[in-house]
Image (cartoon, rainbow, N blue to C red; front, top):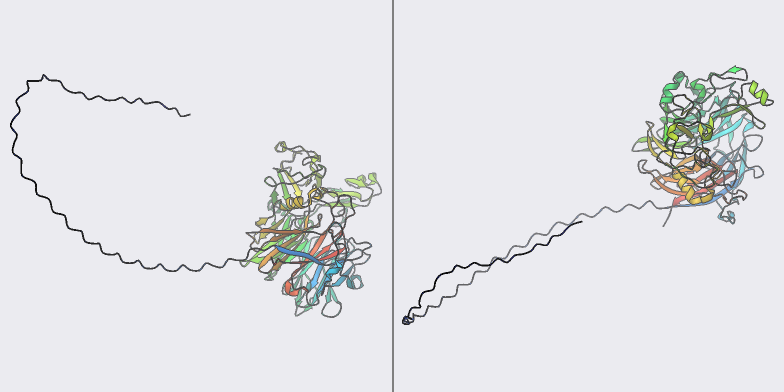
Length: 620
């Protein structure tokens, strides 16, 4: 507080000197008057100043650059829908592809006893056939299968993936053998005529899980997952197959790319951020298990760069990416590392009865992408990943619990059999180190979250100093060096929580909110990229919630959330309706669409439905 003081002002007095007065003298005579003074003359006027010259006009400013159109909101509406095998729809529509020359949709249908592909005409759409129910969900259809391609007439096994090449009018179908460890085949069809015509089978690796053509149609690349038998008695190596197509003719044999050069380098790969989970060192069903790196790696999905040079292959369970140089078929592995959840929020429990976002220092996510796609910007290649996550759990036959234990199993289940291996645990079943003292390891906190047991106990003392959960609950853009350019962080969870409220983190086959919070959340799995006008968009399908996230990724260093749409009922306790579990997606450019506007075709695994969405820039 400021203090004030009063200043007193003093008046100074004039001091005068004193003297003795003398007598007054006589008055003198008056003097004569002096002459009058002469008047002065007026001064002359000053001259006017010279006018200043006018300044020159300034130059006109240049016209401003026309402003660019703002990123207009998308206009998204369903224009087509089909349900395959409505009596038993699960698995009836999984992976989809589009033949632009005929405007046909191809969908793998695995709901029956044999593998088939349903072909649906998409050359016109009757909007009147799509009617919303009282929840605003479209359950009716206006499309149907016109041709059924029975794959097992020419190729044994199960269908996992399909791809179409417009250059040579070819269809490729990945067919897995019924017996674990046996090589699968790629079935090729000529699709230039009125119906597909079988050409040949080409043998590839064990369990071909995904097949795709290079943009120029000169090569077919296959991800061979090579999963083990339930008791690990057979564990084939994961591999990548490359099949040449020359002047429209498919080669008789494939080139096999293996990972045997990485055997003995597991520690080096783990230091790069890869993960290896297997029962090495245990004896199961009478066999001592010794899993090599090549056996453990399980290629999942393939995307080929637009310049036809590189094949990018996700290796989901191992949290890695393989890059194949198709000019010489050389391959290198890149670990994707781990997502730090200390500055992001997550709902980690399905038992807390609410949306409960928290930050968890010490918790990390394994990206473990399923679907990937690639695009170029400024001449550089970028990879986009849907970070679903996946653990390992295998069973084999045993008569009862005692038999299971005698055979080296971990647990017995009447439905699944004898558990041979699992890398998953709930956090509440682990002992946490002191750095986790800030949380309660229970159902209301992190206790229900599923994490891996193969990482986190850094000093092997039985206490976990770090926790690693499955998937990253996001999508990510990576550069060709394996560096993260963009990750959607916790946006998927926050957006779906805002939109769906209590139905947040629903499962794909029931209406009960929060059921997937403990296990990968909404689960981004399907992915497609598409050009709309001058913008590049990423569409991310959420397997559990059933919705589709849309992001503008035109500039990978300036990514923007664009929209979210879905067609499923979410009323608690009500029968589930609409399109459930998007598994595969295909983007159709405007110039190849029957409507003259871009389309997004989605295969929904649980509902067995194929949904066609028109996605265009809004005219507003």
